[in-house]
Length: 167
Image (cartoon, rainbow, N blue to C red; front, side, top):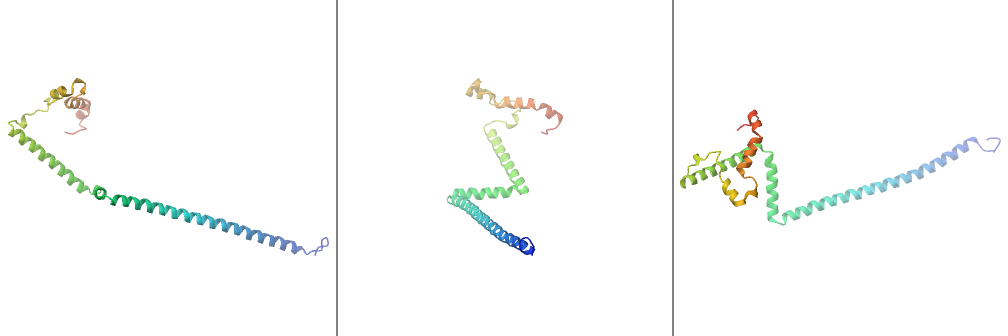
């Protein structure tokens, strides 16, 4: 006990400690409540996000499967995407396309022969249908295919002469 107030010196410390404990308990309750609200908000947000994605995917799936054409197109797109990773498959498809073009060229040559023409007599410098195209579209119709090809050859002549391009 002190002489001035008649109290024991440890009683002030005990009173301050009990005050700190009550403040700590109150602060803990406030923080726990805040954490609980944050947890509930995150849970609602994740549920909403999940429902959104399930709804979007479900709606898109229903839309695609509602029409046989869409489903067929989707299956074809998926197979096209898978085939892009298959290089050998791409090469074989490219070769098949070239073979179709070669067959078509042979058919054209055969038809030319049947009509009495000679497919080997056509020269690359021949004007082709330029005059007929000019008659059809007029002079304002723009350049013909042969004229565009000649301009293109002229533009890239230096590149071709340098050997950067191969025939």
